[in-house]
Each structure stands twice: as C-alpha cells, then as structure tokens.
Length: 260
Image 1 (spheres, rainbow, N blue to C red):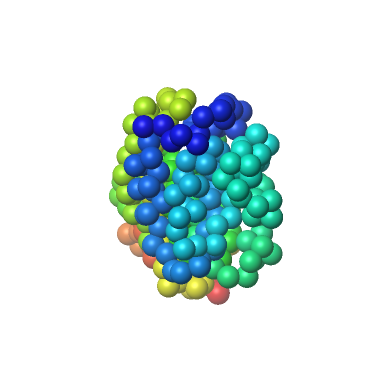
Image 2 (cartoon, rainbow, N blue to C red; image 1 turned 90 degrees about the horizontal axis):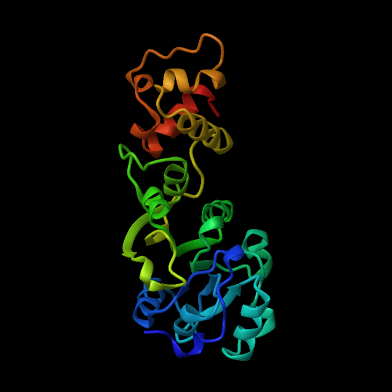
C-alpha cells in the first residue's frame, strides 16, 4: 500500500533513493526504536516522508538529515517540518553542536553511503545511544555477524566494540519504489556500557583493518608489517585468521603489540 503523502516525489538515482511504499513496514521500522520521552531522534534520508510521518507521532524531538532540495521542500510544505529541524548531510553533522543531549539515529539509509554513515556513527558514539537502519542485506548481515562467520569483518568488530547489534528483519525488492536490485535488511544498534576501550583505540582500529585486508592469511603473516622487530608470535592466536577473533581478542592483541 502506497502512503498517500508520497505521491509526486521522484526517486533520484544519483542520491540512491528507493522509497518505502508499505505503511506497515514504515510503522514497524519506526517502532523498532526503544525510546525515552523527548529523546533527540535524527532520521537520515527521509525522502518522501514515509517513515517521517510515523516518527512525527512519537513523543520525541525529531530532526531530519536530507540533501535533496525537492524532498526538503516537500517535507516543509506537506509534513510541516520546520527549516531549523533539517540538518543537511549527516556525514557533515556535528550532533554535539546541534544538541548536547543523547541521540538516536534512524533511516532508510542510501545504500551507496551506508558504510560511511556507520563510520560517522562510530565517530560520534558518545552521542549516539541507538540506531535503527535499513541497509543492503549483505551490509546489514556483515555488521551484525559474529566472529567465525564469513561475513564478519571490519565493520562488525568496530561497531560491536561499542554497540549490541541485532538483525531485525529482511525486506524484498518490491517493498520499494523504484525496487532496488538487492534485498534489504534492518538492524538495531544499542550502545553498550563501554566508555573507552582498554587499549590504544587508534592502534586497535589499525590492527582490525590490516588483519581483515589480508583475511586469508594467518595473523602472524597478515600483521607482519605493523609488528615490532623480533616480536614473538608463538601463541596459538597467531595461527588464526581475522574472522576468528572477537572484540576482546583484538583488544588483547593491541595491548600485546603496543602496551598502553
């Protein structure tokens, strides 16, 4: 069923727009947020307002991140969103500067920048206590994957270091206008209690990225370029490959190689 307010907005390919057309799915996504009263919620890529309409019914302080001028005009004129509540490109938004409180993020994320959105959430993890997002199914599965899985990767480790992640549900191509060429998945990220990793975080990220960039090699060989001279690699962990390690294992490695 097509939301009646969505007619007239054309999806733009260069912005990766695929509009949700089923109001029940929109409601399901909106109600996947676990909210406190009057919480700051930022919807990324509202487009034609299908999800926005349901978010407006919640007891939240709603903000929108949109760059499409046609969509912005529609959101202001039809859904009566005030101009100061539209923040522009999320990849450039400083949440602390907008409001010093905590934030939840939600959206049918443009697939071509969805990983950038996750990295931006990671950068602002002290401000973002929750996120519910729709991604290409493979990306959603990768973020939620556990160690030992083939889909487990860099994003899995970095996001799971600070968030508990749950894969909620899958959507078929025909849930959108126009239909994408891939299935979609919705995941929820909820901030855990970790305030700071017990290691050098910059080096932790380096280890994770280098290990997965050569994921077919054992850690002994994959991390060779960043190990100090004559560093001992006799422990069994060095015989493993990147996908076998969880967050705690990477923290352990970071402290072994570069003690704080």
